[in-house]
Each structure stands twice: as C-alpha cells, then as structure tokens.
Image 1 (tube, rainbow, N blue to C red):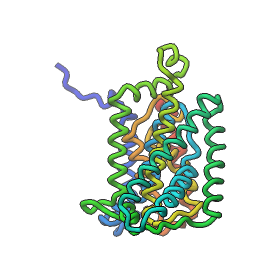
Image 2 (tube, rainbow, N blue to C red):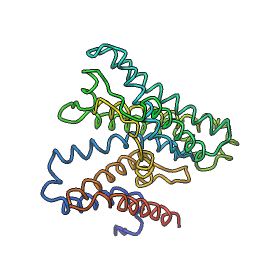
Image 3 (cartoon, rainbow, N blue to C red):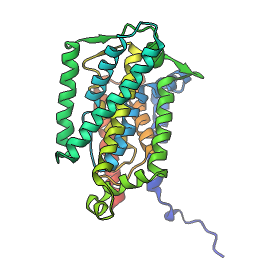
Image 4 (spheres, rainbow, N blue to C red):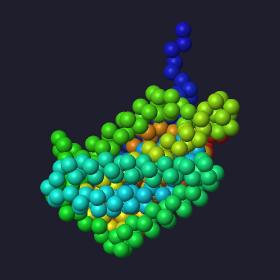
Length: 319
C-alpha cells in the first residue's frame, strides 16, 4: 500500500488568504518592531478594523449575490447623524434614550438598504448606478441636516458604547465578532445563503429553479444597511459626535476587505471568514506603515496594490 503523501493534490487556493495573512503579519512584526506585537497595539488594530469590517460583512452578501453598494459610507454618516439628533431629544443621562436610538439606527439603516434594493430590483437600475446615486443623496441629506458641520451628542451615556470594553476587549471588536458569527451561520447554514450564492453565480438559472430572485437580491442590501447603521452607532458614540464628512471612503475599504478576503466580484462565491481576514489585513497594512515610518500619503497606494494582487489571485485560480 502506497502511503506517500502527494503535496500536489492539495488545493492551495483554499488556504491562500490565511497564508497571505500570516505572511503580512510577519512582515508587520519586522517593520513595526518593537511596538507592533504589543497587546495594546493589536487591540487598536482590531478596533480600527471593526468599523469598516462590520460594513464589509454586510457587503459580502451584496457582492456574493452579484451586486455592489457604493452608498454605505454616506449611509453610515446619515444614520449616525440622525441617530444623534434623535438621542438629543432625551435627557443626557437617559439609558432609554440610548437604547431607543440604537434600535432606531439599525431600523433606519435597514430602510436605507431596502430603498437601495428596491431601486435595483423594481426600478431595474444597475447596482453600480443606483448605489452611486443613493450615495450622493445620503451625503447631501447629512450635509444639509448638519449644515456641513458637526452633530454633537448631549448624552453622557452614549460614549460608553464606542469607548467601552468588555473583558479588556473594546465593544466595537465584540460587535464585529458577533456580527461575523451570525452572518457566517446565515451564509453557510441557512437556505438564504445558498440562494444568494445561486443568484450571484447565475441569476437566470436561479429564476428557473423557482428562487425569488428579487427578494434574494433585496435582503443583502437590507443586511448591509443594518451593518452600516451599527458601524455608525459605534463610530459616533466613540466621538460622541459626527461630522458630515464621516464615512467617506468606507465603501472602498469595505469592498477592498471583501475582495482581499477572497469573495469573487462577479458573485456566487465568498466567505465571511475571508472578509474578517481582509478587514484585519487592511488594518495591519495601515498600522504597519505608520510604525514603519512610511508616509501616510502612501497608504492608499499600498492598499491598491493589495487589492489588485487579490483580484489577480482570483483570476489565476479560475484558470
């Protein structure tokens, strides 16, 4: 009996993202020595990655189902600003006001996502154009409501959410972990996840398979709206205020995290775990460049190179 192990039979593409993460982490250890590996710095990377990472988790569903959402950054700014305005109606020390405002933020985000989904499915507008238009609309609304300035919270309780920690881990990181677990279960263990992949892989075949394609395409936008609302709460509560320009570029970081994590831009294939690693890799890159003394103006260049490399890897794996 031949017991020789054949390394050529291993599907290395399945382990490409974790391996790249390990290599990047090792490079960061060298470039950022002796500060990178310190617990406080690692926690800071997780915290900074969690905001756009949460948005990216919702974006994963949108891209898997064959769509794209360019409005998430502007949506988060609008939801965060209106949430603070709602919160200011309550007394400064009101726990009820904070709870009600969080529920409102998630619901408002879901409605914004639903609008995106309806414009795309019922209006028959391509996802790129529809969400590009909604991005301008959402941003315009928050600039108007804030008079192009800051929306400041009067609550003394609200900052405890974004700046608080549980067992030494910041609350935003816990939220990132919980959302990732829930959406992983939805994608891998529930019927909707299989339907979303089927629609992303081949929408016409999915229709012939009696899948309600419009509903399957709308739900990911609602999920992304909820994740954008949650990220808006975490970000605005940490600062206890929100500027009308907040969230600019979040959509690009979210899409980058999804693509780097191995989700195929054409839809039909992807994973939540990959997106988590993608978001962390972006955080590590930014942190590594800062600790390495490299100009912050070059961060975008490095990020762009990583995105292009990730897409090239996807292309090579298809050959």
